[in-house]
Image (cartoon, rainbow, N blue to C red):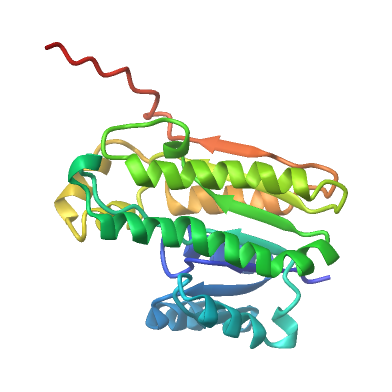
Amino acid sequence: MTRTVLITGATSGFGAAAARRFVADGWRVVATGRRLERLHALADELGSQLHVEAFDVRDEAAMNAAIDALPADFANIDVLVNNAGLALGTAPAQQASLDDWRTMIDTNITSLVILTRRLLPTLIERKGVIINISSIAGSYPYPGGNTYGGTKAFVTQFSLGLRSDLHGTGVRVTSIEPGMAETEFTLVRTHGNQQASDNLYGGANPMTAEDIADQIHYVATLPPHLNINRLEIMPVTQSFAGFQIHRG
């Protein structure tokens, strides 16, 4: 039986890599994102096993309309990958942009819970899988992480709460919490500063989008009696920072 996965934020990074990984394994993939031209390019690359829907996850009406319009072959979602998310800004809280904070909250939290709630009846019926992409930033604070880290802590805790609420339904829930991975993440965070991205990843041998896509696929294809609650993954070159000390 061919299974179907819906992946948000599939126009780049983890989402695009995951779409490729699932199609390569014979799955049907519903790929969503804001950038229609990138979705079309992905569809041209991956063919008829991929169906694309272009919308901003913050637009609830557009999201619902897209789900309502899914073709019959793609409508029965077995796996939801809540990947769409972003970090904006690196400033300390007292200097940060409230607009950036609102965008992160609306994207990383609000849209995730709305889409999850919308698909829960189908996922329960099909004993499906929910994979939420969190971050090590939800566990380990760092200067400038403020709202981004807070949103990812929510994703991790929401995943654990879902796991508890869905007890007995057969639905599995996993929070995947990556560390440093070289994608467009830092470009987005710094509003297009390529040098900042190069400086962060240069010489660090970070994880790749494909590394995380492999983990998403692994979780989705586990035997149905197994659940990984949390999967925290870093490159070997990254570990835990020390405490800050201010001496007055």
